[in-house]
Image (cartoon, rainbow over all chains, first blue to last red; front, side, top):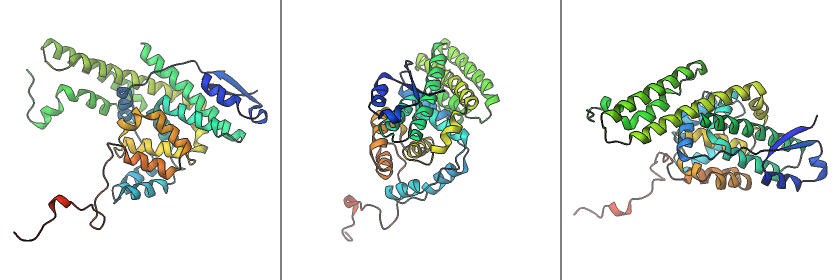
Length: 141
Length: 172
């Protein structure tokens, strides 16, 4: 069974420009859901975010001792977040919102060189699909 | 009659309701989220009362804000259940160490901690996401930290900028 990519019309154009070999085995499903995000909704999502991973808490602690913006950049870039929990990743993607996930999907397709790159795009597109459905459903009540 | 004086009263001021409700909704247990949504509904009743008391603040605005909090909390709860059931986040875990996923998640975490002004990045999300795909991680982070609203780094003696306006010119 072919793996699916939920892509908007614009994203489908980018996908079409990839090589035949790379596109082989992928089924494109059109993403038609539209959700207009607002500054208030973004602020609410930030407020609703709850992080538990020690690695993220440790990062925030270390940043308190940063002496300059370059220190901020170095401390952040050197932080290994591979131990971040599934819970926190879920929280952070929801906080970022569907537009940010769209940006990541677009980048993933534009820069795709392997099937693994498209797997990332596929999973992100599935996340966006479910996120849009949840946001739209909650707002239609 | 509403009045604002002592800190505890200020916390109870209607303009702080939205923030307080958002704060209350941060309890980690998913099971308690429904109860917290009920809390939001109770706050809506308080606002109704405020409207009846002819409080001259933005009652309609507060009501809308609370509705938005409730809707977002419901959407969040529903999404968490779906992504867990389908294993979506589990599949993404293998990519969290890679730029730009890592950079996006870290900046989001820093925005939650108040280190990055999300009101600015959020409003410019698409251009920021474009930068994520086209710039080196250090540059993306530098841009994020340069965005308005960031917590300034703690000053240190050798690198603190000189305040030229107040440079002492000798004993006058």
